[in-house]
Image (cartoon, rainbow, N blue to C red; front, top):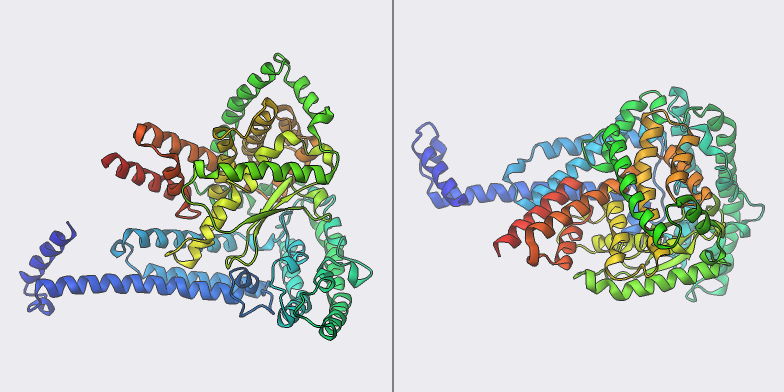
Length: 602
C-alpha cells in the first residue's frame, strides 16, 4: 500500500513542471530518497533519546550509578533552584527538537517511543511550572532517608569504590542545602505541606543525628570490608569515614532537622488539602492526570471509588457469612484484629511466613507467564528508623547491570498491625508476580531506547501490582477464607484511596472523616489506616494510580477473553501487557487491542 502511495505522489510530482528538482528523478530514486528521509528522521529521534539519556546520567550521578554507569560514582546531583531551572530549560529544548521531527514519517514502534518521550517531557515541564519542585518531601523515601541508605545503592568492592563513597558523603552539604533552598522558596509563596503530617516526621531525621560516627547507618561499610582491601587501607578509609561523618554528614542531618523544626513546620499549612495552597487546585488536577495517565476529574474518580467499595464489600460479606458470622461484618473484623492466630509473635516469624509464601509463588509463575526476568529478588526488614511511620512494605528495584538484586522490604514494627492473613496479597504485590517481576523485566528489555527501560507510569506499575494480587486466586495461593479476605481487604484499601484522596484534596474532607471511612469499610488495622491517611495528605494523587490502573488491566483482560474465546492465552496476554515496559494506560489499551486483532485473524 505504501509503495502505491509513493507511486501516486511520484506521478503527481512528475506531472508538475514547477517541481523541477524532480524532473529527471526515477521512481526508484524517489523511493530511495523517501526512505532515506525516513531513516534520517529515525536517526534524529534516536539522537535526541541518546542526548537526553546522557544528560540524565550527567545531571543525576546517583541514577547513573543505578544504571551501571560508573563515570560519576564520586558525585551527587545538584539539587538547588538553579539546577531545577536548568533542567526545565533543557527539557523545553528537547521538546523543541522533538517538534522538528515528523511523527507521521516514523515506523509504529518509533511513534510509540516518540509519544512516551513527549509525555515525559511535558509532564516534567508542567510539574516545574506548577512549582512541584518546591515540595521535595512526600513522606516516602525522602531524600534524607534515601541518602542514609546510600551504602546499599552503590558499589563497594575495592578502594576506589570506598573513596567514591566517601566523596559522596563529603558532598552531602550541597545536596542537602539545595533541597532546603527549594523548601524556603516554597515557604515564601505559601506552597508547603500540611503541618499535620509532620507529627512524627522529625524522628526520621533524628535517627541520623548520632553522637559517634560508628553509630551511623552510613558507617556500616567500614565494619565489613571486602577481602581485597588490606589492613592498612582499611585503617585509612575508616579514619576518613569517622572524620567525614563527624564533621560533615551528621551536622547536615542536624541542620535539616532544625530547619524543619524551626522554619518549615511553623510555616506549614493548617489545611490538609493541597487545593488550599496557592495554585493548589490546578496542581491537584495535574496530579490526578499525571498519576492515572487519564483525562479524568476528581469527581469521576471519587464515584469510581464508591462503586468499587460497594462491589468489594459484597464479596467480603460472602466470606463473613461463610465463616459463621452471618451479616455481622464488624464482629468478624474485630475477630480478625484481635485473635492471636492471625499475628506473628516475632519479626522472624513474619519474615519466615513471607518467604514461604513467595517460594510457593515462584513455583507457580510459569503457569501464568511465558517470559520471566533473570534478576533475582530478596526480602529484608524495613529499617528501624523508617518503620514506625512508613507503609506495610515496599519494593526497591535492583541494579540495571545485575549487580544488585531487587528487594521486598517487610515492615516488622508493631506486629499486632501486621496480620498474617494479609501476607499473601502483600507479597504478591511487592515481589512476584507484582513489582519485582514487572520492573525487572522492564530493566531487561532489549532493542528499546534506554529511557523505556526505566520509564515509570504509576498507574501501570501499581495497577499491575494490584492486578497481581488477584492472580493468586488463579493458582491457589489463597487457600483459606481469611487470606482471601485479606486479599479483598487490600483491594478495598486501594478502592478506598480513590474516595479519601479526592475527598480530602477536592471535597474538603477532614483527616478524621477519611480515617473513619476507611475503618468502617475495611479490616485494616487502625495504625495502618492512620499511616495511610497521612500518606495521602502528604503525597496527593499518587494513591489514585493503583485502583485506576488495575481496573483498566482487568477491563482489557476481560475484553480479550470475550473477543478471543478459546484463542485467548493468559501467558500470551501477560507478554503483551509486560513486554513494552511501563506505559500510559491508553498505550496499553492500544497494545492489547492490536493483539486481539492479530489473534482474531490467525
